[in-house]
Length: 212
Length: 212
Image (tube, rainbow over all chains, first blue to last red; front, top):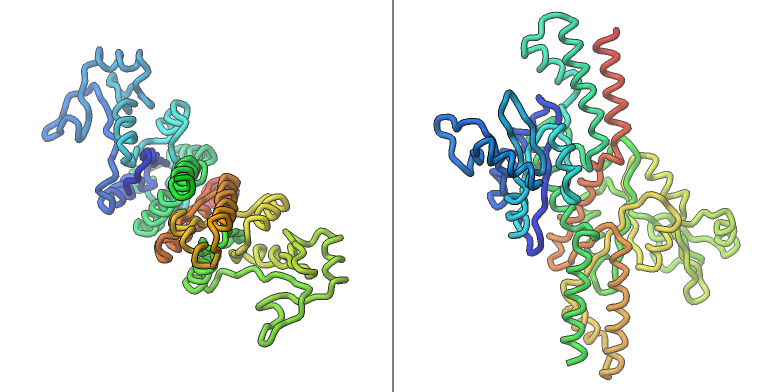
């Protein structure tokens, strides 16, 4: 799904348990020309993790320098380590004309939205709140109170859907991936994205055809 | 492509020669559940034309009454006859949850845009200006001056693309129809269209699951 112009920044997000990871994996399998955004982290590489594939590994000093020069689309501190999406890497891939998928939690996605004008923000919804509840139960919340608390948190998170451009219900992975493909295809037909290239190419040709 | 909520109003438009008729026909063949908007006219039915299929035939008095009560999404007078898109008919189909395709010239589409808040406006582009020029030549303009005039008119028309939501290049009919399908699918995932149904269904279920 490369195109001649700039690539699309496709932000895939949603509550945990909605299945965004599965959908992204299937989409990338079908479209090897689309890049997956690689996060930077200050934690140590685990066995088998490869620099630039799993993460960009860096020291806390390096990470903080990048924060200073505003080179993260988003970042967060988790258990004394930093994680973030390096702006310059994403920029480079988009500029080359390749689409980039950024799979990220809701908090991260909202920060990305603050830090960039572009981006197609897609919210993955669980098949149903009942299904989400079943998954929460399976994760081992035992008391009615604890179940209530987790469920309320998912409930709250789903309200953030209104900050996104699209919502895709993950009822069947294949169907959800097809919807994702449709969204990417449609976005590339949006006049506000391609207007200049249409009018420029028209301009070029009319000169060639009529005024030469 | 019916959905539970209101149907989509899909406005397919573009310069003559771009092939919008072929694309609409193929789309409707693939999606028999999508309705084609039927125009009203004051001209007499021709042999074989069926009321409600080819046109809604009406007298000039009837037509003018409908204009008075603002019951046209657009209308025009052509060679002493009126042609128009009856608002109430389109409304009825959309309300039933069916999508409606409105195939219409650029002038008509822009009037529809003035008269309704909804509508997905799709501009069909010719494969290239060179191809459009070839078609214009084939239509029999003989002098360089006449060719120039027609070409300039198509050139002007293409500028209206900026008033549309999407542009689809009709290079291959199959590909163009697939893009149209993607646009319809993506529009049905747009958060601003489905937000309320997501949040409402969530609301219903959380009450059922937690508070009963």
